[in-house]
Length: 434
Image (cartoon, rainbow, N blue to C red; front, side, top):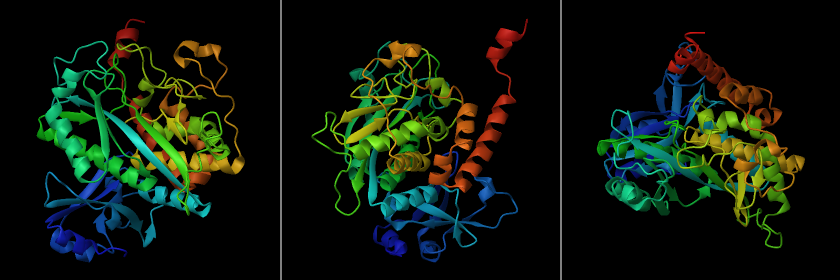
């Protein structure tokens, strides 16, 4: 091991350590390990029954071992005796090929073999609800256009400050926090990093926000579209590719109009090409498609894409160019698995570079107004369409591995069929008398 995890835990005065992994559905799973037992588990890991999580396993499978990555260790500033560490899943002495963090590491290695490293940052939006999840916690947050509302932000000052202070203490470089476009919705930003670090921080951020919200008597949710009339929660990703040996941004070309290199445009072409299949990863739930292609919300805009297109600094498209040397995809939502999100974007982009995919002409129109008048492909209308696109995607199968894609499809299709087995109140209201 590069680091002695047990010594790190001991030196920091921790009494317990959460050995954590994120399953295929993005649910965080953990075991609470006392400090004195870390030494015997740091090499072989903590044991789990894989079938008990959202993984493609059965009760007959052997033990699943969660082997900690010491570089990911976080001491909880609000509970210093407790630590959290991300783990990689192993079974029968081999990495689990459909485990999200394992897959991300494999895609990162594939990029490294080509001389590249992806750096990224996420904008993870969330709602603060009543403790029982019944509605928005702030009864005064009722404006039609509540985005950046100072008073609504300050009514949640104690919680937002605590989360921001934690990120600052952890060295994440938080730089702005705001009330977002929906009532009860917030966004907190921290500095970009390499894809694995960003994924670990994204996973921890979701846990931290939920946990600290509970301490304040609230419930935080990253559900893509919890309220029909309000803007959904996105998880926009800003990303760029760097030379792994010289740490030079290979997306940057200051001589080009938008400041992007040929490599950047090929990467973009790969993301656009894979978008129909990518949706199954970036928008992984039935509810995700209530955010995509949605009707206008109370604020006047969904702020979510409705087509596979790109633009300059224009938020109505799936991908925008916010600045020289980087891209932003506005496709992902709050339900996206932090590890698969990074892995899928990188895999699609690497394919774009290898195949020299052309992203086509930049569109600088308002896609919300243009609608069907613009001849560009549309995003999937529901999870089933996205899953079928993923099933037929040679790019995603090659980039993420057949095991990941097959296992993901197996569990997600079961999830879709479970959804279809339920009758909604809308159906009763509209078809009871037919």
